[in-house]
Image: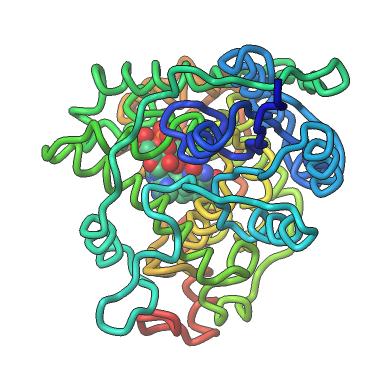
Amino acid sequence: MSEPKRSIIWFRRDLRITDHPALMEAITTSDEIVPVFILDKNLIGQSGSKRLAYLGASLRALDETLGNSLHVMVGDQVEVLQSLMQRYNASAVHISKEFEPYGAARDERVAAAGIPLIATGSPYAVAPGRVLKPSDATPYKVYTPFYRAWCIHGWRKPVAAPKKIQCATPTDGDRNFPDWKVPEGTTISVAGEKAALERWKYFKKNALNSYDEGRNIPGIDGTSKLGAHLKWGEIHPRTLLADLGESKAHDVYRKEIAWREFYADVLFNNPGTDTQYYAPRFAEMRYNEPDEKFEAWKTGMTGYPFVDAAMRQLVKEGWMHNRTRMVVASFLVKDLHLEWQLGADFFMEHLVDYDVASNAHGWQWTAGTGTDASPYYRVFNPIEQGKRFDENGDYIRRYIPELADLPASQIHEPWLYPVDTRYPERIVDHAVERLESLERLKEIKVDTLPYPHA
Ligand SMILES: Cc1cc2nc3c(=O)[nH]c(=O)nc-3n(C[C@H](O)[C@H](O)[C@H](O)COP(=O)(O)OP(=O)(O)OC[C@H]3O[C@@H](n4cnc5c(N)ncnc54)[C@H](O)[C@@H]3O)c2cc1C
């Protein structure tokens, strides 16, 4: 009997089998596939323990759907792939195309070493770089016209999981599943494709139809919490988009998926902006050095309950609500006068759904330094934001036990009332720091929009 034709499917941010174009391509062009995940020490080094624990669980879940044939390998990608190709006499390595700077550079290096990479599909409904202005074929720098053009471009329908996957059998040496534990005292969401599809089903039934309103209230389960599933590709955005209708709530949800695609596109077209200012003028602004106030921000001890609840949620759950991501980011940049990258790095360490493009540009948007950003002079008021979006204080009480007994009328400004002394005094006065941040803005003379890039 002749040897089966084999190809490798190299999983990275696509840990699923449903609607997976690269996996389909591998299956249809070979008799047997070799599913591989390579542990990358660079990425592991910059991931916090919660994200690693999630990844470990996601790999186990993928392995289960592949009949326990996932090869989890340690080492340099070129060496691992070369050795597997030789061992299995494989003719190609199938991948979903990567666009963010690190992944794209890694794939270039692997291809340059002579490994026949075949890229099919990507983690996006529309791959970065595709949506261009019809007038001059340049990329969009502002979200709303990007969104319109993205909708017109469109995407194909999702396809079902393959009926049968014939996998090569790994040896014991190929099964290097990491033993990353969820850190004590923290809870993270359930990983894997099955959990992603179940969560989507639950969200559709319970919260999608009121998403336009519910998405702003951190104290309720009003958002899809699919960020980590999307980050690891346990579900593809096409699957979500295909289920959306034309109501206002569905439209708002589609727009959020488009923000993810927009930021991936922006980073693709401006590769340095994961760490550098998109509007370079802001690099010249007067910032403070990180000190004990930064530590207070990180540990949820600023004395501003809405900020502190959010930071404690991040550290405990590896997730933070979008409303409070904006509030804590604004607080770091405009109240503490620290550079956004410090906050982005802390998010990188703790977020399970950390995504280089959405994180850097979410920060830059809030800091007022990014694409069609919230203008710098828009300073989120942590007290008013709390009163408006956590009216009864439920979110605050959930994460700050020291304030659990305060009524809604007092919980947003506890410094006005006698409270549990374990809860700190305010580390800054928001009204004063707001004016200070506007002064600093004046110094760099960014008083007109649009920014240089807009
Ligand atoms: C400072 C800051 C940092 C952020 N860092 C990240 C990050 O590292 N990773 C990340 O996925 N998102 C990030 N976001 C965007 C947003 O906060 C999260 O995507 C969202 O809170 C995830 O929760 P969810 O899945 O319940 O979102 P939902 O409200 O259910 O939205 C559905 C999906 O749409 C996408 N999405 C929603 N809002 C945004 C947005 N503003 N920008 C980009 N995509 C969006 C996400 O993929 C999200 O999972 C950041 C936002 C800010 C302001």
